[in-house]
Length: 154
Figure 1 (spheres, rainbow, N blue to C red):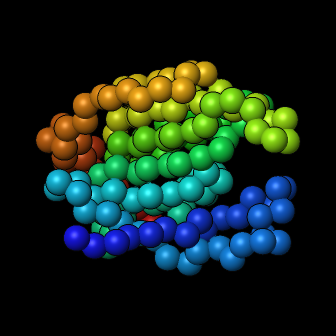
Figure 2: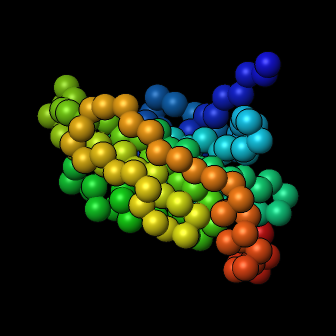
């Protein structure tokens, strides 16, 4: 097989990440079982231009791994849905649960959203493994009926 890695593009300055890390400059894509997956990390969720699904590099699933705190949980849930709708792609957001060493609380809200913005799976304040089904044919048909991506600026 191949090895693919993604370096977080947007460093969270409020936590001082920019003092310890260098931002990534390249998007990454993973091909798996006929699906094209674009991984992202945490704060990247706030930057829709970085997640834009375009003709040069189309993807089917946008995958976020995050430490998104409870006090911004509404933003987390809203932005995951927005990324799914604007990119006509599935979005999976995996977030931590519990408290960290700095006293920040995380309620999870791990979520899978379909290409039209419908929530397929939502785990609030639960540390667990769960599954849901996604299917490519429905997404492809949706994109053909509503070809919004063809009108994008990219």
